[in-house]
Picture 1 (cartoon, one colour):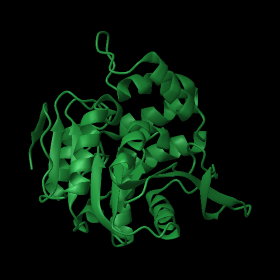
Picture 2 (picture 1 turned 120 degrees about the vertical axis):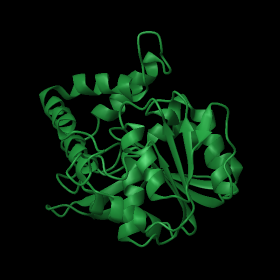
Picture 3 (picture 1 turned 90 degrees about the vertical axis):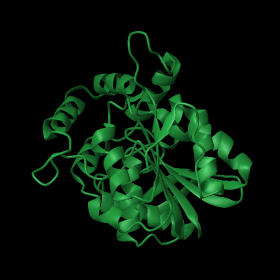
Picture 4 (picture 1 turned 90 degrees about the horizontal axis):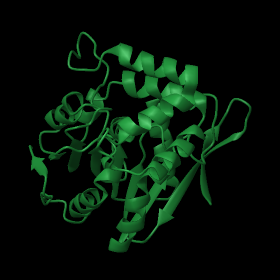
Length: 292
């Protein structure tokens, strides 16, 4: 297994990120969503390296096989961790792909580190530009939603994660886009994470304002969002990210839930390949609408 040291904790112990590095060619870095790990990208990790791409996926600190320090669960630190990974592997002309919470890492890295080493960015079901409803962000999500999430995580994390997993994939009484076995696997991955990290990250993705970060993105961008996303509503996120990046390519997946990286895996892989390899236009798969 491969690990990269990104710092030390208060006790002087190393903080390490676990990562997978597959294939050769143009580098692509996949950043997973909350509350999972890099295994969220299993389908893309199996397919993208077949197309002359070097694909790196890592576990955010506190999740997966990475270290679980007590603190550091904020976007400045996450962006700094990402920079260490890119610098240590000496990656150039990288395509950064952020899913859900990972979209925040993409945005903050571009703002905080000037987009060093990056040639393209992808926001997928992303929490950008600013989720929390405030006086100057009236289109955001009410803060009580995030307070309830944290309260329930503290009260009974296992129960919360099992319920959240169904919402993640848009599972209803008749609509079952993923198997129970897949849900069980996700639960095991999520429950293995640090409880402190899981709770603190809710505060991070809810309360961090990425509007200034998006304004500093000047490389080609792709935005993908499902219009049936009940976790990160498209009205508060995808549409506003597209408005902030008017030259970006914006794909709306008809009927897709938050976890479209799994439920629409073939479509996602095709759109990623088209964007990474061609960089000019993304072909419109059946069932999507290009808005920008």
